[in-house]
Length: 430
Image (cartoon, rainbow, N blue to C red):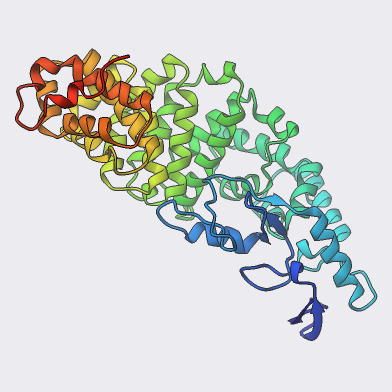
């Protein structure tokens, strides 16, 4: 037990010194948790505290504050319902009366539940208005209990219908609030998956929002950011039938995010755009349309801006997919700094980047290996990096790929003073 100053009645401005069980306190804020969530490292934190910690982390090095272990990007924060109920019971016992669910900030859960269902009923009868949507957003921000209740009440159903209706009427009123609410209540359960799995109208509406160049309240950056977040989530659970029939405008609008000088400063938005494009790449027609939208050129430009490690890994993964097509390779080679960029990042970022960089170089060398291209690979040190890979502490498969590229054009590279011939035969084929 810890001696701590804790508010036992959040409805009054009074504090009492009470014995607080240590595991009720957030390791970051050292306050009694209202919305406890557990990370993949097994440590439980107050949701707001750990989310703020993650958002402040830079260069992709997100670590658990308590254990200092790495937290993989995109890893889930799992609600700790058992601990929440224990905390609720403990708070109630402090003055002998039930104080409600601490997740909702001390308010009575049943009262909030009635408010949620009442707002939803009013929305269904009278249609959406900004005031009602703001009430829902306020309730959703109170905690997980309310967000679960909102899904049960059909809030997600209403929002998924509201956004396409707004698109058909070309009305932007309420779009910002609707997207924020959907972001708060989104959970990949079967109900929400069923709402969006084959929802072409929702995809079209989100495409419309992504193309906003301005917004009536000067909040277009947030609106477009929330839209690409939702788009990524929808694509993640969409049916193959929906994905293989995506319109060129949809893919083009996602690529457009990578061109926006303001949006690309926000790494979370960039990651969502990259993931959405990657998830659509298994279909050849989608790859062609992504290339036609100028994605390869924009990916190179984005990488030259020196993004964080995880973004670089996603860029190289997508480049490797797009360079499997002739049009993708052609676009890459049209960029004056493309091969030099691929060479420079090799052996400097991560094994995942090394693997995709070699894959890109292999595709270029095999299918686009003109004398000019092969000579450029030598000049910008791409060949030197391939030789270094043979001596580096990396997997046999990667070394085999590098060796294959070196042998592919050895007649050109053997005579270069910067390449030792023995490197080409140091690891003979098995």
